[in-house]
Length: 250
Image (cartoon, rainbow, N blue to C red; front, side, top):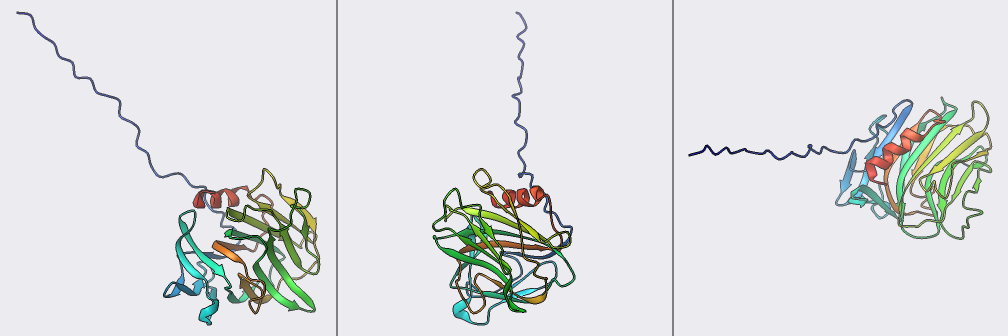
């Protein structure tokens, strides 16, 4: 009787799949960071306070009717604050000790029109706003969508949308070398980074308004998931933008 030989074949096992590797967020010069889902004071689903994780600055709204609404999956499944006739105010955003600034926002706009995102220091020494970021999704054409205006301290971004798509916007100012700024949008295939001269409006210790101008003028309609303020002008914003793209799957 012959011997029968049996062989036990082991199938190759697939390599374990871990969580995706995220690009680290730059921290040099980081002064304030508001991230939805963190540092919030809620009244029901309304956000009465939102504390940044770096300097402890509180964005607040005592009037219930003006508060944004917290949405745990507001932007690509990540937490966000829904602004729709809403306004938060931050007192004591002291930028008087710097000549450089980088501001990054992760947001989604929900309709066409003009959306006020941030306003700092309204009516400073006769200038209507030291800096004002807003997006105008209405009436833009490929020829004008990269147009940027910073007259008297205004910063205006024209971008055609789509209104419902998440965006990353990065704004950089450097008045130390020359009054200038750059704006980057994540629709880079259509809208490359742009660079224009700017009026030399000093940075001051004044309130920051989020979601509308002071007094709830021209409020935005959409979601903000994160705001970052750096006291540094990032000439290369690649890592900063990629970190936010990775986090929010943009």
